[in-house]
Image (cartoon, rainbow, N blue to C red; front, side, top):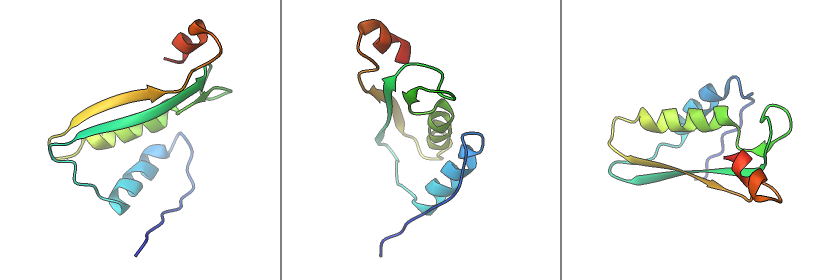
Length: 93
């Protein structure tokens, strides 16, 4: 049976949404390398106009994974050009 979870959230309350998502879709991460992929397509303030994975959502996912009672290796990786110039790419990261 397929399962879907839909909830309303904001970046201020995304930790609760992430907690609910992890509870609804449990994963066995014992001894595994877990990669969290974020995107960065345009530099800037993520609350205003940047095209990036919002830092609060990223933080909530990482905190949830780190709170796992099972040992795991966590890796955070980024993806995306960040902009048309090398400087714009650096500003995203």
